Length: 161
Image (cartoon, rainbow, N blue to C red; front, top):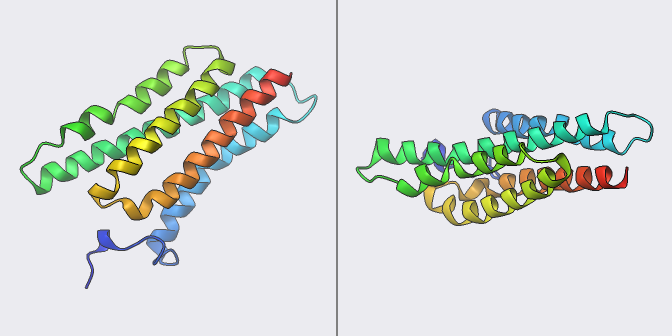
């Protein structure tokens, strides 16, 4: 029988444990999407607050993306004698870059977060498959596309107001 961590999420999407992962991943996007949509509602006000809400939520996603590399590194350390230096060095990069954007004006921060997510996705597309996470790249791509889309739409909404 196949090891549980070798099962493809697309092949077992209906299984309860896979459904929970997808539910949590997409559920975490709900506030970001709602804040982004609210930015486009005329007369709602609080544009700056909503922009920061989208920005901080995107930064939180960047932190999770970086944390996955630490998980990869810790798993390698627990199962082999090799030190996966790259994963431990790269892991904090997306969160620190995203945190740095929070120190900037929100309209600039949202555009820079798009860059953070683009670079992180390229890195992950090269490193996740070798760590056995290749089957999860579909979910990673969807989450990234939605967060990047929210950042772009929020930045455009702020620029138009």
